[in-house]
Image 1 (cartoon, helix red, strand yellow):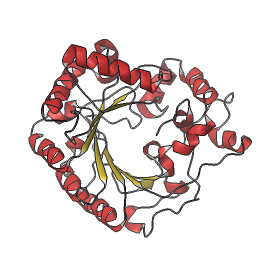
Image 2 (cartoon, rainbow, N blue to C red):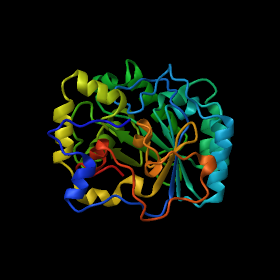
Image 3 (tube, one colour):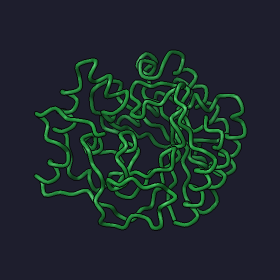
Length: 318
């Protein structure tokens, strides 16, 4: 299944051809692992429609296969995502198995899931292995943030950030990296990332004494729950036009799919997490991790669909 564009917007694949461009692989240096769609939140912008009722979870067997994959091949970065990865019962085995071989291991968090029962062991492991925490923190405005994520989430996120700072995360010289991710609250493209980072840094420090290393700001991808909201609110056509008109050919060089393979919760492989959301397999093929003998070679074409406009609009999505 692929998302459909309104007729007035050129399909993404055709837009590449008309510009004489293509999207092909470089060396695969990043392993992205989605450990499941179970989440304690049901954010409005979630392209995977993760939430508390979802039951799709990466099994212990698939966790073992992923760890084995990380041993067979050399990855510079390993990116663990969800759902809320903290809610996968095998997350300690996964992070423990991935760490210690030189890769930069990152754990994506919505912050609030890090505050649940039994999370002490997870935080201790992250501290010990120096796992990078990449935290979703969409907005500095409480009302705006909670319109995306739910009531009471903003202050809980602030509490967890303060706790992580207290443990050394985000502090200069600690070796414990804490990065934030901000998404626009509505149907628009984010502002200049550097300016936004300066604003977040100043306000978080002044109001709550919070420090962080970097902030990344990305356009919301028109898939899943965000696409449903766009359609229901009458913003879908204008948002797609906005993305298409902001297409930046230079952004193609840095998009994450060129150097990444993404493993779904069930072990199937994709070019990125967004293709995973619509079941568009690696290079357009359905391949399970148990069948992967070699990494995709440089030059292979990457499967694309219309949501790829979100990754190539403006400054792009790295």
